[in-house]
Length: 258
Length: 257
Ligand SMILES: Nc1ncnc2c1ncn2[C@@H]1O[C@H](COP(=O)(O)OP(=O)(O)O)[C@@H](O)[C@H]1O
Ligand SMILES: [Mg+2]
Image (cartoon, rainbow over the protein chains, first blue to last red):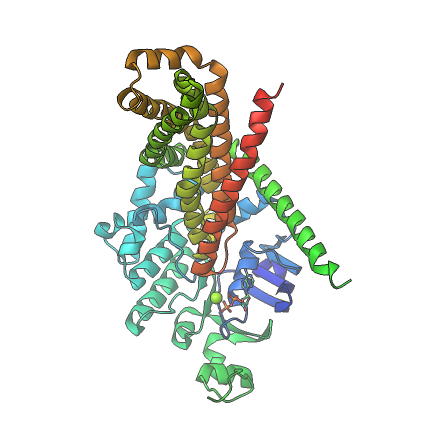
């Protein structure tokens, strides 16, 4: 049934020098679904997304987007596939040399050939959709608070109406209320676009809001996946420890007593 | 053999670094000549490099011209050859000191700024973000800087030539007692096309080197603020050294016959 899969990853391996980050990872994201990947810091969640999107070259394995193998594509074909993607980066990654509206309009101008006037109009509408007024549009990213930056990044990620959107820790570093605002925005945007979403989070609340399905990455592999609402009944001790946030359990943190 | 091992490793690392740089350069040039072009960004870089470097380069040139006249006078007066001062000043400035000093100053100013800007963009994932927004970072970030560097350094150096000669003139006319009119006449009569032209060719080469080093080190920086700092230092040092090497090579090509 690969026809129904938007993203299909098989046997993905990625190491940096001697450090093995992903080993033999398999992952499926069905069309139109929102999958949330959880896992500890440094387990390779961002690396996984970057491999799928083509920002990093995997050492081994297969990645299919819409049934098309992307790991052996030429640069030109890659650029075509890139039009399908939108990404909200972990740190926002807003262009600090450009005002907010140009950040949001960037993909429209560069990738879809809109002129600046049209693109600005669309950008203002997208900013409105994430609750930012036109007064913010002229500001530079460094003049915004963390929550506003996240919202601008979100607006930029969805501006080109991509088929697949990646969210890398969209709520990390935000207060609970702003987190919830972002979660609901993500849920709404993904639903409105009918997009497929792959999100990363540590935030259990976020997972329950934005995820249809959930998967946990540990030791370079996906060790559990299932429906997001079943995360509390996973029957997997690693998942239980993560969800309940316990220091004691099968996942050992290498800390020595003081 | 353990003694030779680090030596061999350093040698191999050096070779692969040269290979990486060559590939980067080739890619940058190939992509710079293909659309889309970004005239807005090229203009911005041209202003940054050409206009905002003027004060630094002008100051360097005027004092170099002044000290050149003074030193030549103290040296040449021993042979009663003071009349050669205008010739020495204009030749040194146009052929060597103008392009080299302007190149080195711009390496410090622009090479560092480019490395820091691109380095910050790299470590904050802005370069990755460019890629996801269907934009090739080589075309968007690197090509405008290379083009602006190649185009603007000759303009800067031409200005530096004039200002440098003026510096020499000021010292000669008002301190060393030269006749102002005949000093300038001497200068203009003596200087040849090739003297100025070779300097401007050098300038274009140096502009390319500065922009390339700034972009290369910035683009490949990693590891946060410390990495950006290292990239900046490397950009300035490598650009300066390459400028001095290229200076010799271009001089050799123009004048050794
Ligand atoms: N470009 C890189 N070079 C070297 N190591 C990297 C690089 N990117 C990530 N890593 C390493 O890969 C591991 C996983 O990183 P990452 O995917 O960012 O973790 P997270 O799950 O927190 O997003 C980390 O240990 C990190 O040190
Ligand atoms: Mg991460």
